[in-house]
Image (cartoon, rainbow, N blue to C red; front, side, top):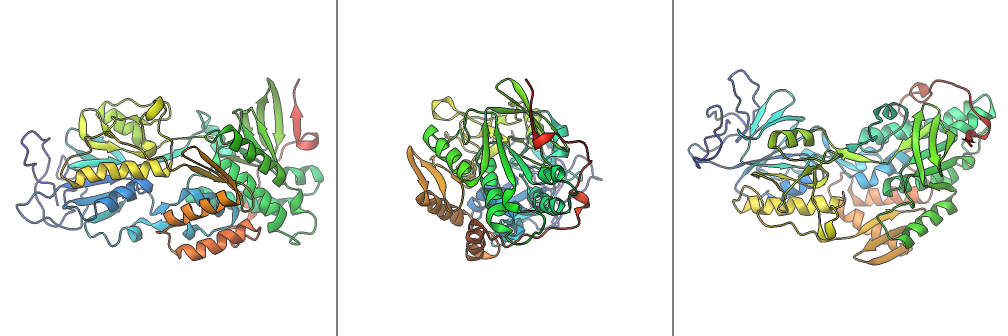
Amino acid sequence: MAAEQSQNDDAPARAGGTAAHELPGVSTSQNDDAPRARGGHRPAGKHRRHIVIVGGGFGGLAAAHELRHADVDVTLVDRTHHHLFQPLLYQVAGGGLAAGECATPIRTALRRNSNITVLMGEATGLDAERRQLVLDRGERLDYDSLIVACGAETSYFGKDEWREVSCGLKTLADALDLRNRLYGAFEEAERASDETEQREWMRFVVIGGGPTGVELAGELRIIAQHGMKRGFRKIDPRNAQVILLDAGERVTAAFSERLSGKVAKELSSLGVTVREGARVTAIDARGVTASVNGADERIDARTVIWAAGVQAVGFSRVLAEATGASADRAGRVQIEPDLTIAGHPEISAIGDTSVLEGPGGKPFPGLATVAIQQARHAAKAIHKGAPGASTPFRYLDKGALAVVGRGKAVCEIRGHEISGRLAFFTYLTVHMYYLGGVRGGRLKVLIDWISARLGNPQNQVMEGSLAGIGRTHVGADDGGITRSP
């Protein structure tokens, strides 16, 4: 139904009247002809607060769960149908897991929460004065409190044309497309008419030495070395070349220098060529150009994977404009220590949507644990009747992990460094814990994951033909790598 006038005379006025057949606190508009979302009702004469959450990622789901017993109505809006467990997305791309094993319908995750309505739609506008969120079809959702947790998307640092000639790894669609390209590359190599073309198809370049790039590069070598034995006649997948390019001085820079060194060493033992201090300057359909020590280097490869950067999704900029908040170059909105927008205590921005300096003046990292803890901080205050939190957010650092190789990982928790098998089992335990909502159960995911770690992916299935794999043929240089003076 349309939201009723707030009991507080100082609160922003709401447009529209009361209709018992509409969503609680939702779908008023500035004119009677605008679309209205439908679904539930509110007891007559009683103002039940309406909380709108934008985003069904880790932060959005955590906020919704925290409010499941609160005397409020909650509407969660997400442009996708599912909650995605992004830490295992590289396993879907590599064929280790099926799509449904790292994604679950948001409705399924919240089906036991009777006060929560899920809408599949995209937030496109915000009227902060009227307290209305605008959706892609023009619906207006009234809110008493708004939690923005819309997450991040791939950033090409202003080179958006690179999107067309590389593969990202941020969404489920990205992972499935990359899986097609990875396995399609070997199929193309098998059909290649000459050795130069064959080498191009069997050379994979991963750009970005963070956890995603490191895990994916290692996974590619494991698949090539152990996952496709005796399947081809003209090529030997074990000869596939994986090159990891990182512009920084060391890979996995978020870890200590010692652990970063272990990561690089382990990748090298797998057969990955690690190139640190390599700044990519161009990407096209047939390879990459990188600047290394002041010299340009050309690497011919048919498959280029971008894992180098993220930015806040577009709605973050809408939020900044509507509230007058500042935003950084990545589109993240500056928030107060209590996670609210300055001048708008009813709007909380969490996770990758926002930027907030922690102890020592460094921004909080873009980790799921940060988003979850921020969501709980804001939602607990709302549960108690406040429009948002009023106390500073305190982050409990639970560490960082990354898998490198077969049954090996690195882990850093509050100054304690672990590597090797123990770190891998720590990684496994943590991810199985947070994976609880994924349909199919932890056991199925665990079996497939271990199988993939041993070089036997269970989901090496391409969708469609090779038509979407091949690209325009141009000349190649000798050996695939060229250095300029």
